[in-house]
Image (cartoon, rainbow over all chains, first blue to last red; front, side, top):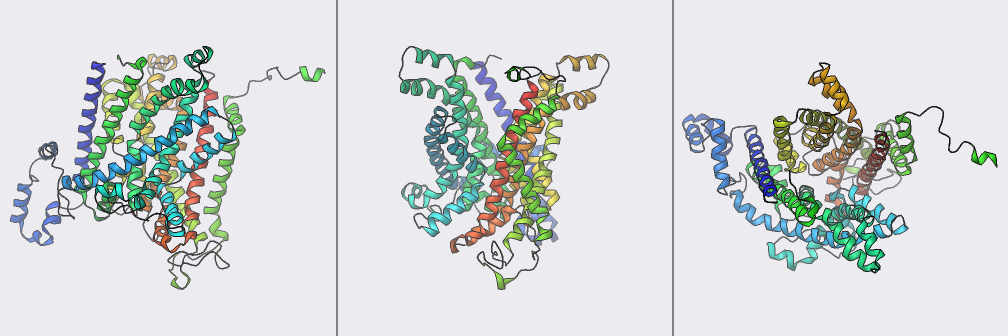
Length: 317
Length: 296
């Protein structure tokens, strides 16, 4: 187990290093001159100022030295400086990331609470009308782009029947927990797509578990149907779901970006979208690194959780 | 009485080809057949429709903006006065073209990358796959947004961007296939006879992974359409005056507060129908190719 952990963490670090290289290449392939972009077009006529700027920010060094300089800053938590908001990317993250974590966290918890029992129920009543209805719904929501779901929800529950606000809570993190009137629609939008995915997986996981020998044994020794389902089938079916949860982080983050943009929800995804419109590359690439770290850590945790939850899969390679 | 006992259990004189058996399994899947029919109908609607139903999708006409469905236009008009039924066709052409082209390109790149990586193994494999891992850890939408924000992409450039950000999962799958295929006897035999690596990858590894490639390519089309639609919805994909279904929804969102439902549903329903149909077809293809694999 320790050997597996060390190898897996080492692999994750290598992947993260590669991510910083890709990000650096993207940062350097941006069209235009950084010095002129920041100092203004007048700097063209003043080569001394340009040279001073390039020296101060290390742009006159060879590229690998620039990369190491940038990587050093990154390790100290210096993600760069936003060109349009006059603020460091790290402080922007400090404001926006908690909002996104709240949105993603609440909607994923709701998605799990709904999807796990629905998937279990579908598997137990497989090939019955209930199963078909749920399958049809999950196909529908899986195929619907989140921005369409969000727009329809605004139309139905905010314009036609004014139950909820059409925009996410605009305040800080606290407003997410007090302003459910505005939070409901973004959370539901993001949760619907996740529910569709998770319930499909839960259904097939339960179908796999139900045929296992230990389930037959439990039935044979007279355990009640309820006990077999909850103690034996459900607990073992949750193992693939734990893995799936870790691996769905990129998908959920993309969903969050779109959901936040639909509802003007002031989280990281919405800021990323605004930065893309204004070509604020330092902000975008700082966020890319944070999302990549989340993804790598997520898949690492998924692997570890798998090894911990299922003793048959102790990686020995 | 004798008729019942007669031919049912007898194998047919000539063993049918694997392709025919696969096709049979596919045709038995009603959902997939329905999906195929829907896709053909939508493609005909988008590409042949404009020849029959002619509308002006070039000149803004403010006199006829935001009209509800009625005698003038069956699906009403949008904020610029464009007829929505006609716009749906034009936008669909772009979505389908970009999605299909990007998926084909992504499949080719991913297959080659994965086949080479898996065939050579060792250090080549490690380097190539860690690179895939690194790119996979940046969500496709984020990566594509960074790239398209650098320049206003034309349709061709957009295809390229989407393909270059979505070949990764394909390469992983094909690498897995290549790892198991490269130790097969026929590949070993070819190597002993003096065949080169290029021949191994192109003539043996890639063709034998064809099932995985085709099934994966099908789902790639769905993903590519979703991605281009999302980029256009965010205003950074297909740029005006061209549009696609995502661009139509972008316009629709600004008019949702006025309750102009007819500007939202057509494009959204079109996207859902296409994605669901492709998923059904992909599932059925997977089953069909599994029949093929049973023979191995």
